[in-house]
Length: 406
Image (cartoon, rainbow, N blue to C red; front, side):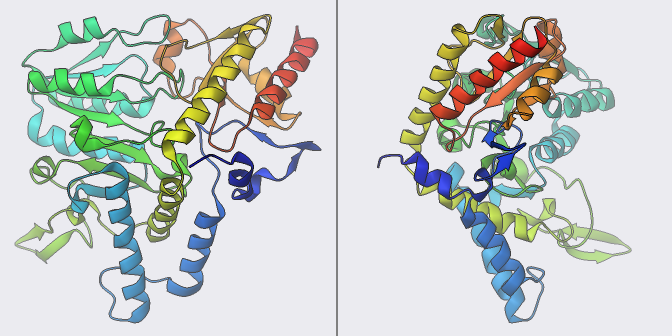
């Protein structure tokens, strides 16, 4: 199957607009991706025809909503290739998913003297929950060093592993650097000392296929809005044997089997982690997003995106005064950069005036910014609907920024 990017672009109506009297060039996909008509239509159809609560209704609308909601869980199962659909827990996104694991897994398996390993390139969402867990339990947080190119020091990681390590939690693709980490090797090494592994897939699942069984990941998490779905919906995958041992972190309706003042019994998976009315429309929208993506040739899409990023790096190498932050050999979707004599916020503001949307700041990755001794970067992040012409527009915009600021 070949990739017709112009046809793909037609599926995303938001791209066809003017911003500040300039054609929109949307290069902020690391923050959130745009939504195809398939998702927009699925959301509209749910609210027009099927809007109802799920699981407990005794009428047709509730039946239809429940079927769609649980079918979405099966779609995620297929998308990640999990063994069981009940290994998929609906959450608000990657951040909540990591927090659930830190709180629930931590309650059962982490004690004083244990060790948790993260990397220096992590998003704050994969740092702070583990710091909080260490504060509660007396466990110790250890950090995998990152090279100047933005690659994990795997020799240092291997040396950190011992029987005290109970959890390794690392990002699959860095949102700040674009680095694709060797997660299969990380998982294998961690398992050799009995540690469990959580992989933050927020920036990976939109760029290439992920098979959690092949990886042997214990937990894998992602956010719907970064893979063409709605905001406010995400997924926590966990191996069934682990999730069965982990207690719920919130109490309320839906997650209970029976409640009395003498005590409460909880439902089994996945419902014991899904208290209250869930984000029904979000799950249905994510279902449409993943089906849209899986209907395309994902290998060809990955190759197309890799070529686009390579082209952006080639243009950057020819751009005087431009410094790329993150030059790992294996990258996906991200070009983070600085321009001599300018602040990232000014770059973003002036590019916006030209209709070019990028992200600026520390990208919720302050520790790696501190390592590079920079306040942040300007970040262009690419997706399946971006083109070489848009990369050219970015660099034309950068030249205008340099003329104005330098």
